[in-house]
Length: 157
Image (cartoon, rainbow, N blue to C red; front, side):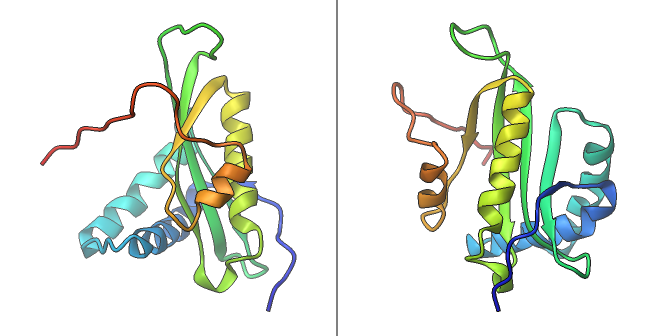
């Protein structure tokens, strides 16, 4: 049953377990199944960042029982000066909606909240990785493929 989306709020350290649960939903949808110790590590990782890191925020929507139904995480770093760009570059990650609450506008609301927070923090560029299912959402919010040199990433083996 569809309900109108609730307004996003900034996540609190006490949301760590639910943020971890939703992160697992996102990872499982990408075919990644972490081991049990990872879950505990992730749950321990969130509270300090949510309480003390001004460059990190998560926005969430909860249901009437206090369970999170959707989340998106944002963080930013300094960037070298670049003409026409702000002093920071942002990254949106861990966008997830509980399967029982999809297609109700929740992801759009939390991503927009993170985007607004990042731009208000001085981000002149915001990056994200889009799954094929979510690409249309990000494009509708103004995200596009980068023009210029191809973005590349190195990862430890």
